[in-house]
Image (tube, rainbow, N blue to C red; front, side, top):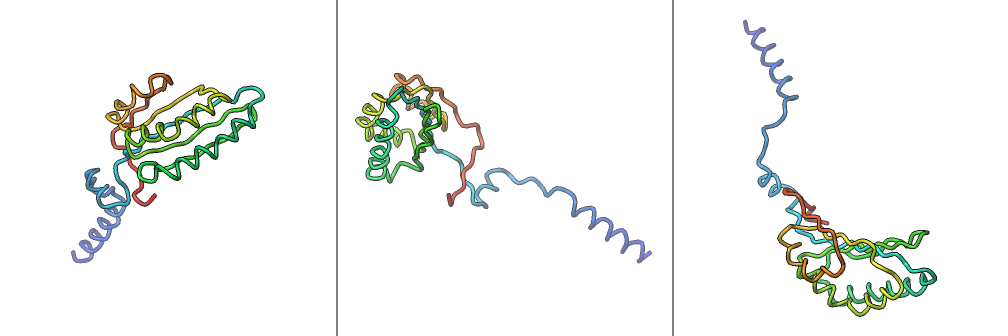
Length: 161
């Protein structure tokens, strides 16, 4: 009988090792990890450089970077350009801690953006983030015709990045 109980206990312990752990509530798991809810507002403008204007457009990019570095330390999470591609497209990747941070950015770079728009057109504009933050941007961005993408519930970001 003792041998039987020993074997049964061993088998049950082995099986238990392969069973999923009890589900934790998502909020509890977030608190115990390196993750937090994502609240970043991203703006992704796609520019098409006008024919013969590549050099002039490229000369505006450092001006954007200088203004962001000098004036947006408290609100900009990331900022940079991708491209240009061979067919003349440039994407700006930008993230802000709130809708107000994005609006501050637009005010900060407005003059340089107007200069850049002499040499390139915005052909696509995506705005992504929490729905309540996107609502705050609709009036200010209306002239650009953006597409809004509200974050799905449960979006997370790493606390240390």
